Amino acid sequence: MNRIFGDIDDKYIELEEAEILLQSIPYDGTSTWGKGADKGFEVFMDTTPNLEFYDIETDSEVYQKGIHILPAIDENRSPEHVYEAVLAKTRDLLNLNKFLTFFGGEHSVSIGTIEAYRERYNNLTVLQLDAHSDLRPSYMGSACNHACALHKASQNTNLIQVGIRSMDVVEKPFLDKNKCFFAEEIYGNEEWMDKSIDLMTDEVYLTIDLDVFDPSIMPSTGTPEPGGLTWDTTMRYLKKVFERKNVVGFDIVEFAPIDGLHAPDFLVAKLYYKLLSYKFFAKQS
Image (cartoon, rainbow, N blue to C red; front, side):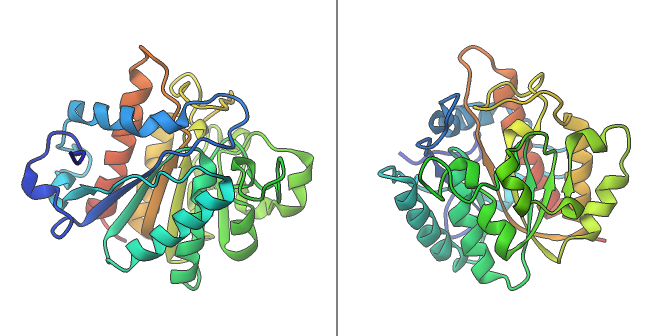
């Protein structure tokens, strides 16, 4: 039986009519500390019926645009095989002219989606919200490791990084300090928001590693880092991005649920729905 987002009516879930597609990629093969990101999508889906589908901020019910859940990409033989499978699937999905959303899995799954979008859009910006820079050219023998998730994008897209607060020295040559907004530098002000958006091209692909949030509100991730972003700050920023740029797709990764701890589960479900609300109903400037 196909999964249904929340408890929305059948008329909003069919592929032909839905404007939004949700593709899960439950791969957790390269994570090196906390495991469980392969379980994240099912917990996310189990949480969505608890959402209120009216969004106060945008005065909208975005589910009426239609949300179709695609069969999971179940490739797990190697990170390279996952990359190839995700790349091929994303290329195919882009031909459907729907709004594509992706749910990990760990962050290595984004390498394939970003590459497909780079091929489609000539001057793509990748906006990365993350605690970690993920710029290693290779890690543990693979360029498709979660620690390498944005390396390729740093070389062939306009990469903007927000919330970074952990990295290895080998990543420094690949980090553009003019386009990286470290967490400790953005506390207590919002000037960085407009500055970062001004650096973006028209089309933006958004990749959100949930460890960008402070672990006090998002402990359910494989590599939590203290000093993360708050919910309100992140939502104000993302709304600005959607208002001023054409967000062409997004992914959410690194959700590793903790049994019995439901608040982070709901945060993830709410985040996904808010992004859709911003995409379709935030006023374009």
